[in-house]
Image (cartoon, rainbow, N blue to C red):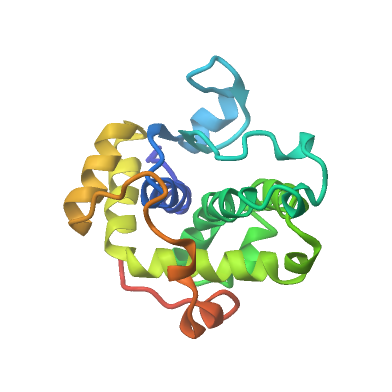
Length: 212
């Protein structure tokens, strides 16, 4: 049966959760079947080809990190919060997939999450030097905390994506708000609220999750 891969649905649901939690508008989410992925690129809303099995279309706070100077946040401290939020946008996808597959997130990120990791490294390079050493592990731990905190909502979004393949952003946003009882304002949730010892352990440990 030609169905959308469930692991990809969870991956994109994780990305969507992070954008929603940061109060960032989600435009559209797409998960392709294996057959669709073999037929050619996925075209985003701007008409750009994307060679991916899934895609969350939403705006990053730092849109083109590869074009910014390394360490720039040392001189523009306000960028640190934007970078750390964008790291959630990057890593929450592969972390959610890791939870679903009962895999280590740090290993999966270097596999199916490689594109997310590449963007994450571009973002991390912008941070002040004092933050570089722990930035990646901290971002993974925060993403883990976020995903585990809202796991039922991640499952619901993944189910919807697997069933439909393509879903408009406002539908996903409404579903997340309905399940969680929350309506995050733009940048209203503090990133540091995701810091905890438990969250740090989950960043590197083998995940366990409810049956889905």
